[in-house]
Image (tube, rainbow, N blue to C red; front, side):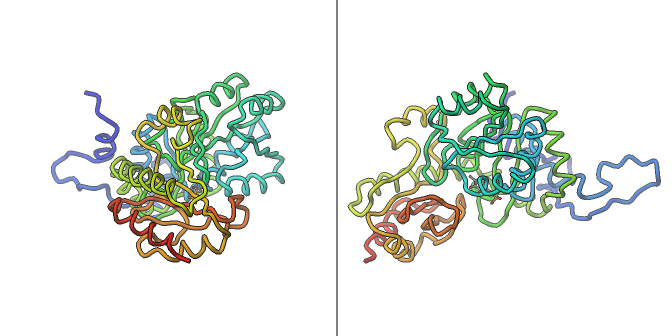
Length: 370
Ligand SMILES: *Cc1c(COP(=O)(O)O)cnc(C)c1O
């Protein structure tokens, strides 16, 4: 019997024996008792492994039919993956409008001899030339953040394969519930579980998923040696959140699409960015993310940064906050972050699971702020 991903996700890691707990226990404890020199314990010291991480890793693996490794944060996962992939190559091609934290980290790795190049990944000819010149790692992200541009991962994967370049996809925005980069040519996926995957804005955690066992072992070694491990409680909370990811992200996608449509018609809004809105990538968005466009959208206000600040402050329901993917809708003026290249009046909106009409009423009244 082949079960749907959502079914496997709900049941993964849970025994059916009489008397077994209905949820996996949280294993704390940094050490396990030893029988002496000859014992071969799986978990003798906590940095090497923990049964609570492993049930989460199993569930993440179910989602992507891959091996999953969890980390203390998305950035910790990014770091380990970059270090593992640059053992044989020293150049990193990153999207020029991708997550700014990855670009900042890549910049810091220059001192380790890792060169990074920022590229527009929609320009496939340019990507092809860049990969031809020098052995590289291609770091892709789609939809991009905060412009929500949809990139053709299958075509990027083909270009990467031609030059034996490993391709990584940062799948944080869509999550594996909406998009499966490993089926489109990615060697590995990095997901910040801090966002939609855990979904309740109460943990920081990250994951690397891959079907390449050798790569998984090297990434694991970076995690163990550098100690960028997850806390057991965070892993447990994330597992609990992950089980409802398909439900939540479907609802968030519907809300986000409705708000994007509303904003498109609004006189104070200059531009709206949401997967599927741009006619040039509409068909691609449908094909690559058949289950919906995800929780994130962004829009540019017809006005300056102060006008955007006033709108963000004027909401009663939508929470003024960074990050995204939580149950409650939130928004922020993105250019408040140093290092972010978004336009001054761009507001990034994360749709939660509230009733659509309540969200639209709140956004409408906030847009009336002077
Ligand atoms: C948040 C985020 C990250 C980093 O994850 P952390 O858990 O905050 O370290 C990476 N990529 C994207 C797209 C993100 O939104």
